[in-house]
Every structure is written in structure tokens, then in C-alpha cells.
Image (cartoon, rainbow, N blue to C red; front, side, top):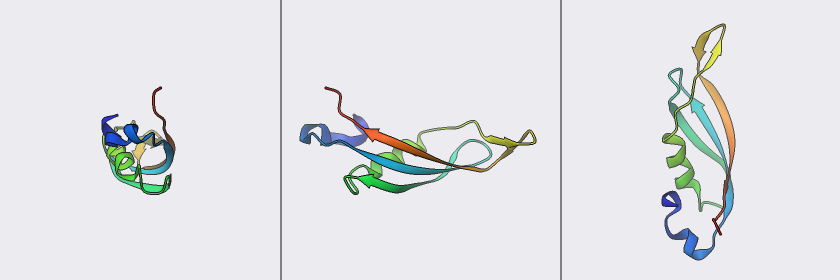
Length: 79
């Protein structure tokens, strides 16, 4: 709820496709909104969410490597 502010009062729901670029230490280097419905409404919240996450880094031959991950986020109100 805190991520999307007062949108729950307006009954707004939607979804976002977000691309994460993940560093070898598991932190987010960059988060890019690929698409969002309604357009632009949840972009800032999605980017804030992404930068609050930490991942286990991908590995190649046992060595951590940078990676790219795409995630579909659904913004749905609890009713």
C-alpha cells in the first residue's frame, strides 16, 4: 500500500513489466519499466520496489556474473 500512495482510494489497479539489471553482488544496477497499465501510473512505485530488492547473483562456472531479469508485477487492491 505504501508504494502506491492513495491510489487505493481511486480503485486503480494495473500491471507493470519491469526489467532488472543485477550486479554480481546481487544488487540492482538499473530497473527499467518495459510497459505499464495504466500507462505511467505505477512506474515510480515499480522502480522503488526494484531498488529495495536484493538477489542471489547468477553464476557461470561457479563465478557470480551480472544478469538481466524481467518480472511481471500485478498491482491489485485487497478487497
